[in-house]
Length: 299
Image (cartoon, rainbow, N blue to C red; front, side):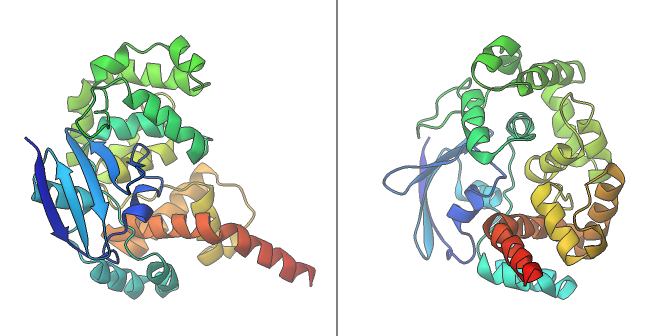
């Protein structure tokens, strides 16, 4: 059954362009007519956004779509909460209105697409995620349902290497086998009901998953919105804003734990969402900010 409905919501509350291209999911595509085509778990979506609404065609009802897009929390309330705990983020919030963290249910997809993300760029992760997604079944909107674990277990390392996955091919194949041995998708979904501090060490038992990728899975696939994945972009932001004594230093395991916990203590249950604004700001403005600093140093 196909549901069609309009959600009245402004682009300041959720900006699909910003949200769907912010590195938390990799298989959404915007067609030539401006419609976003994507899938999450057992749901598929076709979304067209205007300034004050989103037109939806999907196999799920409006409450499910609202939950996935996290529409029942006010952006203004979130911004006020963040500003109360860290006014230094206020310019980012006002400059990137409508950026949200999705409530994804396709946790298996999050695990295996983020296994493609280690030491990788977005323009290479997207085709890898698309290749894995293509092992699933085709939805009516042209998106693919991500394959289940049994389907992933059929994929060989040689096939993935020939498709350009490089050393990540080994981790994908090994992680699928390890997950099967640990209880499969049942084991994975149990981590959604665990605490963040219980979930991330479990995820690092999978080959190729270190602390940063585990935190990405916790935040973007398990709903642990207190997770703070720290990559190069976050490290640059956290040291610039909060730990200037560490600017230019490498991100060791102990430093990761220190700055991650300090940020979670500062922003509490919205730490993961606040992190997303730091990430996006550095993607957009980090290079020019570093260039300005270098020019200032020269002068």
